[in-house]
Every structure is written in structure tokens, then in C-alpha cells.
Amino acid sequence: MTPDPLNRLVAQLAKLPGIGEKTAQRLAFHILRAPGEYASDLSQAIREVKEKVHLCVRCFSLTDSETCGFCRDSRRDERVLCVVETFADLMALERTREFKGRYHVLHGVLSPLEGVGPEQLRIKELLERLNDGRVEELILATNPDVEGEATALYLTRMLKPMGLRITRLAQGLPMGGDLEFADQATLAKALSARRDL
Ligand SMILES: [Zn+2]
Image (cartoon, rainbow, N blue to C red; front, side, top):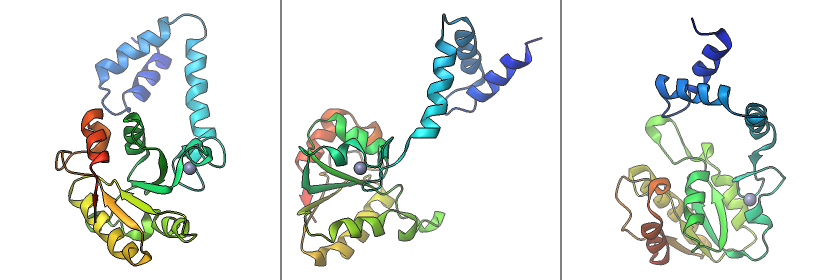
């Protein structure tokens, strides 16, 4: 018989994506055997991520203050704004070290089938950000799949009259792919060879 606390830990770990019952068990034993304060550090880190991390009020990436590090960093060019679907996509672009502008995270893509319309995304907030006229180029870095393309098209039609340059990441990224999983070289190339829309 396995002790109940151990069963509970295994059950919680098994809920994580990509973690099956066996791996959950191995992780649970690892935590049980780990030296010193590892278990309390781990549980504190999990608690704090829920308590302290929230959306940046400006770009909707993640932060533990009011605005995120990307928005606060005065060395980043506020004239170039890169629109991404998720925070994971933002991090993928950051890993290329190619982009020195600002970000805007939509938190999804238009998907009529799943009931996601413009009002479910941070599009209204994007418009508000563009209103002061400081942004000169908007890079639409939604994923190169059907919904990502449709979202880019929707934004282009809506924002083109504002007179700013609107670009899209170049192909080279696999169709139907996901920015989060693209290798750095491919993503860096796609970013530097972006095209006007
Ligand atoms: Zn921000």
C-alpha cells in the first residue's frame, strides 16, 4: 500500500501536460528523497507563481509588477510592436535575440468554431495602444496556420487605415506549425525577412 500523501502527490503531478502515471511516480519519489528544503522551495515557487504573476497592464505578457520588463525597458524600440498569440510565442521570439521592439500578447487567435471572436482577444487594448501614433511598424507574428493567418488578415484590414507599416513573419516557418516549437535559426530568419502586408 502506498501512503496517501504520496498517492495525492502522484495524482497531482499526473495532471501536468505530458506527465503520465509512471513519470508522476518517479517525480514524486524524487521529491520525497530530495535533500534539504527542496520540497518546501518547490511548493513555495508553485504558490508564488499563482499569487504574484499576472498580466502586464500594457502588453499583456506576464509580470509580477504592474508593467512587465519588456514595457519598462527604455532601450526597446517603442516604434515597432510585435503582436503574438501567447506568452510562449513571445519567449520564442526573445530567444532569437533579433527583436528589440515591444510586444502585444493577444491571448489566442480568432476561431469562430471555438467561439473566439475579437472581443475575447486583447484587440481593443491593441487599438488603444496604437492610438497615440507612436508605433510605426506592427509585426503580426501570429502562427502560420489557418487561424493565425485569419487573425493577421483581420488585424491588417482593421489597422491598415491607420497608415502604419504592417508586416508578417516570412515563410520558412512550417505551415501549421507553432512558433513556440520553431528552432531559433528558422524563427530568426523569418523575423528578419518579414514582409509587408
Ligand atoms: Zn508589458
